[in-house]
Image (cartoon, rainbow, N blue to C red; front, side, top):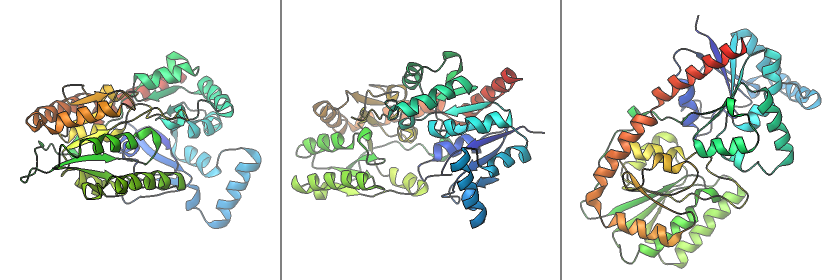
Length: 384
């Protein structure tokens, strides 16, 4: 019988959550089940079974929520699911979820694996209440998984024991992203791409400033922004960038695509030539954690990358080989690198091939999930 691992994530799953879905979908030696409070995008990320609190009848759902608030106990549907499915391990995605699941794992008597991804650690590290929960998790978890060495250093700095902290790179399905050597369009047009949520750590503002600086010297270059706000704060960030674009008179040089579902996003990136990812450490302490999965995907697609030396981005972007790296918030540096790469399209194919080879070697989802399954087995043996 194949052992069962329960993946706990809420919601299951945001449109940008392909990197979590792949960790579940590509399991072979473990059978996955999902525990969540509510579901989203099941058509994009199909999996079964999913045990959703909001998927229950109205009265049962509200009773469960009330009991959780009063007693601080896990949701009964999740406790029952672990028992019914015979789960041998609980894998919690994001720090807050892992902290909430300490009791659930303890009651079930199974190893608890926690994965951290970025803002769940960096943006919360200054919160005393969060630090208390993190300390409890560090004492109880069997394993803490992080994306790269920068994230590992952050987690160790918060007091997690070194023996349970392991680097597991976020893999991508390279078979779903065909390699496409880049070259300018027949009319000479070059599309620079920025994508992601409009939050400070993504550094879109600095990328926009850098693009505006090269506009006069490169009239054939346009900026495509697959960026859409979901909260008032994010929408304000978008409005600020739009106002800047209008003030500088470069409206006809910028394409806004907004937020796209994952399948349409994969289509949109194929007609872009250069990816710009100017990530920064935000004022509130938030950071990319490891590195944006978008960089991995676009490197796999054959796109040269201009990015920053932020967190674990240098683990993906090979400076001078698959892309070019500037310092954080260095608009002059970003503009110079962007101008350099726009002026030398003869280097793009070699950069794209170097990026693809690096991703296939170090970030292929099948290889990473095999490593994940090995770590699962280690955790089971250690707790036996």
